[in-house]
Each structure stands twice: as structure tokens, then as C-alpha cells.
Length: 436
Image (cartoon, rainbow, N blue to C red):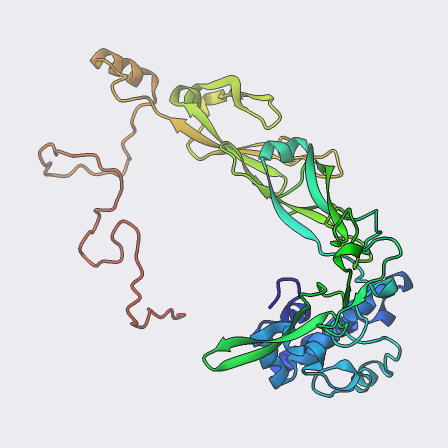
């Protein structure tokens, strides 16, 4: 299928494996939601176009033969009435009958479907209502999303030639009728789709570029050479408000390429993509970071700058440890109002700090005297009251340090062994879970 046409399954919001019943149910729901009589008057034109698209999708996908053609060839299978029927619809179904059943009357005067023998989707003068949008990803840092960003960039775009007003010819020159396509702007060709199989498809005529007529070389516009558009460099400005999120779209309306066949140009749409940050993680308007403290700070408290915020400010925390309270590993400290800005307000999210206690390096206790001084200030080790002393005590055991539990139960086939579990896809039936 062409990348420019909308997927009919998406129009009805169904999967490609949907049954006829599911397609019919989805069609009734979508048609009711988009019916022009169900929306305010100023929205009826847009609803009219959407309703036609919904009806077109239903008529194709509800017919087994037409659905198979669409799945294989896309909308090219229905060009020039290849699968057309009554009222421009495939399958010979009269839409007035369907509309009468749904809404108590037909849609007389609504015109045909887009691309199905009518003027659906067209604007004044037979032009397409709007040009194609240009969508691109735009990576931004968390700092830029926090503070906001305004940037200017140069865009090279197609503009309608002012010299010939988009006609492609000199003043008073007349375009020649295209004999190759008989003025239709389209040509039919056969395309192989498999061994011994071909399909018929409709493509823009190469002689007239799909316009049905063309200018001789001597009659072409000197500025655009008959192309009807010229390349122009323009400076555009992109503004990202503080607090914007990944996936949000910044729209520069009407800044896409111009085409004389469009009633108006499309938009340039930037979809924000948040770059990974080395210090902060974000969830909505909240931020999370790791708070690294020494063992001495965890035990006694501190008053210092703990990290640099996204706007360059140093965040200072004053931690006091009254009555011997200490910071423990993985403890969470919440700092209200130090998260991300919330768009269109003065509020901010919160900052969550996860405590990470950094223990001293090996060998920091130089001698037995230093060990005894540390033991003197730390709480004594308490023996549990119910603990019993074994009658036999083994000799002093030797030990070695290991990095993880990968060796725990290794080679035993016991599912409680250490390390990561690996699922074996050997076709055997998996374990069943039962409720007691």
C-alpha cells in the first residue's frame, strides 16, 4: 500500500484479523460518532469527510473479495472503478439504503467517497483540501524540557512559483492536452506480483506528471521550468514550552511543501524525543535521582550541595540526625516542588532522592587501635536473648568473596538455584498454575 493513504483497518479501529461482525460493529460506532448531523454546524465539513472515509472502509472490508484485493494491493485495486458498484462503492451496495437503516434517511447530495468516484476530500476548485504533513523526530535534553527552548532553523521548501502562479507555463501560453492518458492524468499498467501473476494498477501519467495536460518546452515558465514550484529557503522558529513531554507534537502550521493542487499546504510536525539523562529520571512531572552519601554522613548527618539541578542550581540539603536516627540504603527522600514544571501553571512536580550509602575503601582502618576506636563509638553488637550457644563449635572457617549468586545451586537443575532463569523452548508443555 502507498505510504500516503490511510489504513482502512485503522479508520475503523479494528485489527487485520477482525471478523465481519467486529467490522460491522466498529463501523456503526464510528459512523454514529462522525455523522454530520451529530456535530455542531461549524464542524460538519470535517465530519462529512470523516464519515465518508468510515463508510468507504466498511464497504471494502465487509466484502470478502474486496477485502482480499485491498489486503494484497491496497487502494490501487479500486482505481478507475476496478471494484466499483452503485453510488461509487464496491460490491454494488447502495449507501442510501444503509444510511436509511441507520439514520432514517439517505445522504443525498453528499457526493462520492474520497478516491472512489466522487469529490470527497476535495476543497474549492477541485483541489485537495490540504497538503501532506511532514512529521519528524526532534531530540531534546531534559534540561531543555525543564527550561523550555526556542530555536531557529533554515527550512528549504517548495513554494508555488510566483512568476506563473503555479501553472507551469508562460503568460498566455496554452497547455497541450495529454494524448498519452487522454487527459485523465493516470495510466494503467501491469505489475508482476508473483510467478505467472500480474495485477493491474493505476499510476500518475509520466508524460504530464498526472495533470492531464502539459506545456511544450518553449511555453514553460522560465523560472520554474514547468515544475510549477520553486525551492525557497526560509527561517522558521520552533518553541518548546517548559514542562513539555516526550511524544508531544509541536506543529508549525502551513510550513510544509506547497503544491498547486492543494487548497492549503500541510504542516511541519516535530515529535519530541527525550534524550536519556545521566542524573535524573522522569515520570510525568516528577523527577528521581540517586543521593550518594558517605557512611559518616549516613550516621551523623550533613549540610551540603547534593546535586546540580536541571537549571544549573545547586540543591543543598541539611540532614540532621536527632536521637541517633540514620540514613539507610534505598531510603527515599521527597523534596516537594523540585520536579519538572507543569505546563500552563506555576506548579512543579516533586523530586525523589534514593539514598545510596558509599562505604569506606578496604584498608581504611590501619591498625587494631583504629578498629577499637570505631567500635567504641558504634552501638555494641547485641546477642538475641533467645539465641542458644551450640554445644559443639567448629574450627574457624575459611571464606572467599564472590560477586553474585550465579554459582548457588549450579548444575543441580533445582529451580531455586542462583543466577538468571532461562526458558527452554523445546516444545514441552509449560507448568500449569492451579488455584487451591
